[in-house]
Structure formats: structure tokens, C-alpha cells
Length: 172
Image 1: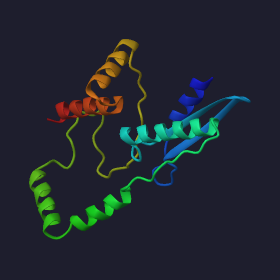
Image 2: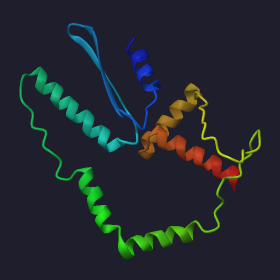
Image 3: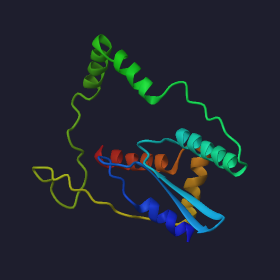
Image 4: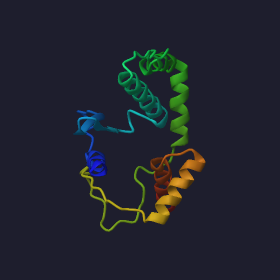
């Protein structure tokens, strides 16, 4: 039952325009049997941050159970501080240097990848997307997880890299 709830939470799409991009649901099975399901879009949380969140939830839970207080110190720097620093730094000559670099790197790049398709590209993009669900068989899934643990990567990172390689192969 818990697995089904978790899978359902994972299947719910995120609306990037309206959010929320962090969802939590507390399931109560009995008076003293609960489960917390958390779904976080990867655009707002990386693996490092997820570790911090889970550690702090664990600390809060332990403190609550033992009726003790816990001191969750504020981080010395927040993302907004970094964004302000970057905005101040990335202007004038530095900004122009960055722009010049990328204009040079992308000079002559195709606007669209020439991928083999089952129909011609429309003259005007429709921006209508779709998804194609797939499942990895058990041995391949286990191999992916083993590779990820060994390389310090997530399955998302690994599968995205594989997809990028496939696109590079097809597009030249």
C-alpha cells in the first residue's frame, strides 16, 4: 500500500509555472504507524540538498519523539546570496567576455538537430510534447543502480547522459 502511494506521488506531474515543486504527504495507517512521502522536482533540489533535507527531517523527528528541542542552524549563505553575488559579478567586461565566448562556441551550430523522424518537421513549432513511458528490465535496472553508486551519480544523470549520447549519435 505504501509503495502504491509513493508511486502515485511520483507520477503526479509538476507545474513549473504554478508549483508547488516540493510536495509532502503524511499517511496515517494507525495511531502510531505513519509514513511521509516527499516529492521534489529536481529543478529545486539536488542530491546534496536532498541529503540535508532528509537529515534535518530525521533530527526533527527524533527530537519530537524524545520531546527535546533541536537546533537547526541557518546556513551561513543562502542561494539568494549567491544569486546577488553572481549578478554583481556578471556584468560589464566579464559579461561581455562570457557572451563572446559562447557566441564563438556556438557559431555555425544548427538551429535544429537533424534527427531521423517519422514525419517532416512543421514550419511553425506547436510546442506540443508527449511522453513515452518505458521500463528497464530487472538485470539492467540493477546494473544502472550499481553503476550509479560506483560513479556517485543518480539514475537520472546516468540515463540523461545516455540519451544525450544517443542524440549526439543520431545528429552527428
